[in-house]
Image 1 (cartoon, helix red, strand yellow):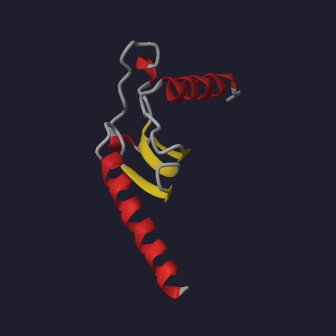
Image 2 (tube, rainbow, N blue to C red):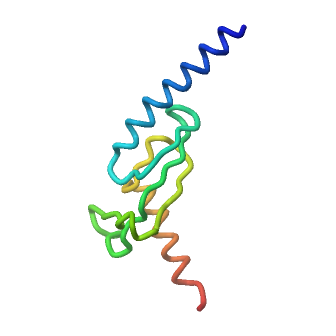
Length: 100
């Protein structure tokens, strides 16, 4: 039983390292933490520049700006994908509607 558990743990670790290094190279991803290999990750990446949210090819902010997104979800999430653009547009609308 101990051998099976150790083997499974080693396999899980090796798989997460392989997936993690592939995603870290994706455009815009600052870091990632694979929680469930190939399924659930924690990604950090810069927010999209507000003025480019309506462009065909939006642009991420400089990572040094401090406007960083912490995303928990699918490991194949695209920081410049349709879902992220819509999410940040909604966030921008909420911020503009706040008083003060």
